[in-house]
Length: 282
Image (tube, rainbow, N blue to C red):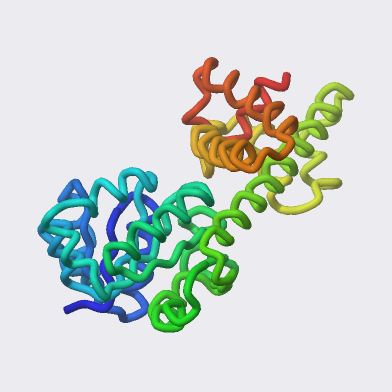
């Protein structure tokens, strides 16, 4: 029996599994496509031939897949449901606060403990001192998992018993990032219109390394080697919009930003770096 099973081996899930293995934990992995699981065998992972095998293998089940709907489809089977009793499911997929509430209720009804987490950043922050992950739910469950999950981020914070709190804070963080990015875009437009090079902006008034990186990406016209794609951020914005609608909050700023993402999609920029939005603003 392993310590933890990782379900879903996309770029984030694979990085989570590798980090757990590097920290010396016994890990079982499962993915719909076997090839991704095979790649982790060299790192020391055990492979669950089926989702039921992966659930059976560990007391803690970490889920990092496309969305919450897919999570339910994977676990809601006659083979898997009886195995959930007494296990702790840690959801790290992208989703909305309402989905966190719904998932907690569903897993608890099927005998499992449930924690909901939000990763604030890309796979490259996993396992680093700068990495930040928020986790919400029953504090006793978090205490049971902390010794294993703690290696995943230097800043792994418990955000409270309110199960949707991690996702709410995640969306608030993403909103800040999007607002910041729009401000950087406007600043770069002012420089371009005034005949000041974006390399000069980067070297002088960029407020931080991220603004400098955006300016350099645009200056070098290097949109096709993305760190974060337009598509990824468009999906994140969609989650914020859903939550704003559920709460009935003002969403005028979100609508303004969403329009730019829709235009970028129509122009064929979805797989390019987020900085490619400058082409829409121009």
